Length: 203
Image 1: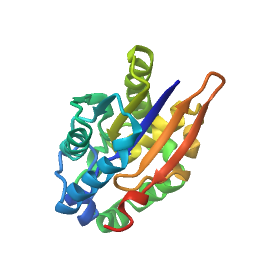
Image 2: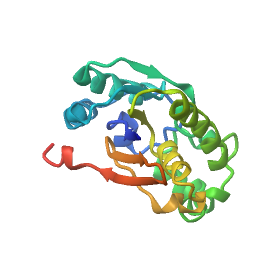
Image 3: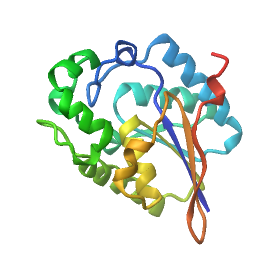
C-alpha cells in the first residue's frame, strides 16, 4: 500500500500581492518559510520515504525545509510546476477583473473549458503532472511518497488519482502548506485528508 502526501507550497510574495504566478519563479515570504517548518513538523511521524517537488523555488524551498526536518533529500521534477498561465502571469486580480473579466468568470465556473493566450489547458496540465505521478507510483519502492507542488497542479493530480473528471476542479481549494493524503488500497484509492491546515492554525 502506498500513501501519496500532497503539499502546496508556503506563502509566496505574489500570494501576498494577489498576483497570478503560474510558472514565474517567486520566492517564499518569511511567513511562507515559517509555514514550511510547521508542515515539516506535522510530517515527522508520517514515515515519509521520499520527497519530490516542483522545481520552482516556492515549492522546492518548501520541500527542502520539510526535507531537513525529515532528514531526506528532495528530487525536483519539472512536471510538477504550476500551470503555465500565459498572458495572465504577473497580473493582479484587480487587473484581471478589469481586463479579462469574462475569461476570469469562466476560470471560476468552468475552468476545464478555458484557453488563455499562451497558457496550458487544465487537461494539458493534468497530463504532464500525472505522467510524473504514475511513473513515481509504478517505480518507487517506498510506501509513503511526498509531493510538494502548486494549487492548480495538485488539484489536477488529486482528480487524476481519484479518476474524477476535471469538471470538479472548481470544487476544490488548497491553501498554502495544506496537506492532502491519498491512500492506494488494493481495491481503490481513498482520500485520507484534504486541504488539512491544522498545523498552521496557531501561526
